[in-house]
Length: 136
Image (spheres, rainbow, N blue to C red):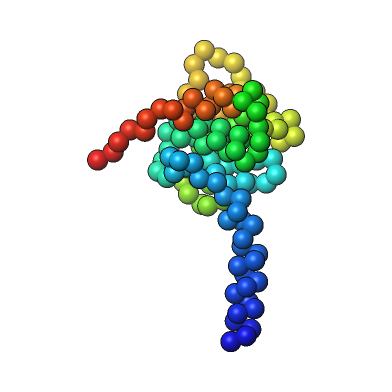
């Protein structure tokens, strides 16, 4: 019994930092660190453009301490989450040069979320003010 309690205590202690680093927005979007420079936004469902950018803004501001004028960069567009295994996630960073992110080629039409896309924390935060579409 004593060994079981020690093992449980050790497991709880080792897992505590992981759960402490997780962040959830008011809209239910989860944001997990991938490493010190990259974080991953994971919506409850497949996620909208607004869900991804709002989650990135909230995390950058509240957890990473970014200013409103700092830029958030997409590291990896929509793909499978590396932290949860969910099918829809986007990875972001505040340090593009350190993770090797370059701006995408310029064009007149941009669809989706692609590596290199960026916006200021304040601009991304405007997506938090949009009312989510109610689903019946």
